[in-house]
Image (cartoon, rainbow, N blue to C red; front, side):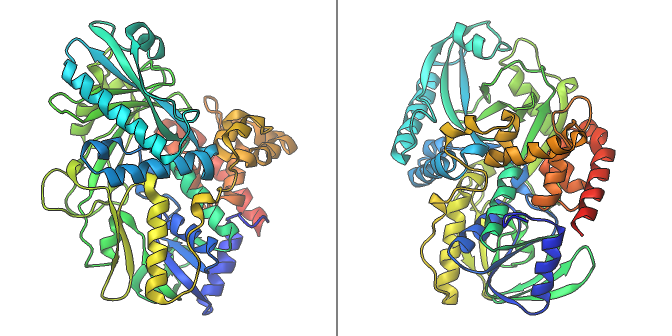
Length: 513
């Protein structure tokens, strides 16, 4: 078994060691992008670390993002130059060094109609030029993210044929970063941490934390264990307050719709549609590699208990369809919606106002019990959040380790962007697995049945399910459908695959024993 493989056998072995009294330097509660990033940062510095997650890697907010790697343009518009620069730097690190295989440049089209004022057009273009300045300052080459420019109406329609040509004066074209899949980034981070010795334990729920121990329950057996560490870090995101009473968050709901293939003909170009009456707010349509289009995103405060899996309210569906339709020849309707998802952003509670105006800055808070809790932040800046959390852990615990190295540490499967095309595997697999893609493809070559799609209408193969169980920590059918393949984003697809996936998971788990 390779050092970066996560599976049931490794989980049992490492959980048994911790239950037997093995003490680690750090315990991280939470298996989202922040927790996985912390585990990698700590392991890369030579610290022993155990990450526990109540459900699965990327179970929470980290799988419900817009799949974008933002350059900080929104924060620049709000006057937060420091956060905008941090976002641009972290975007550049992801796209050029740590995860070129999981990221891509995505064109962003801002259509300009007769109803668009010259002032608004100038405002948007000024922001795009300033954002390009951030790109240059971050050291991201134009070969990765090209410079913004104005384009005529004919070129805009060629890029996004579904746009309404009526009154179209032209468009502004810019570029930002996008992920192949946000959950896959989290899994990749966790596996890279595991390759450095980190214990990654899913379906292990933290019941109680203090500065140097965690009472946890193995959700597969019901056994409770005490895990001891030099420092405990709470990275449970929007649920952080359940384990740290002093933490005050104001969750914000980001809803997305999934449009059926062909419902919004925009090719490979995202389209940003301004929200009427708002100067710096857009609904965007994001094309996905599988042909679907994501429409998002809302930014609404959410009160009350935090649900494990948020739902999209009808009001958000109406809002997104109504705004998006203003730029298209054919209005979008509910019949075009193949699915939906919502995530809750763990924003630090502020002094009132809209959640859209709350800062996306992060903080590391020390509780009276000695637990360090990471709050705020966003997916793009996960690496800096992790670095700051481990720095704080070193300062508080007295542990000795060098500075963070993760800005220069490629994730498993990573290779320079110009070499990805030389990887001997289908491009679809390279975009998901990078240099590991030939190993996934080889499973289908050895056993032709594994090379077959899970059902008619998908390219996802049985081999990818087997790989998920053997190497990516999937322990049951939901782990595969929800987070390793994302088939559950469209319910009929998940149901079409469920029986075959269940059989493959059962056989793969049996083969590990």
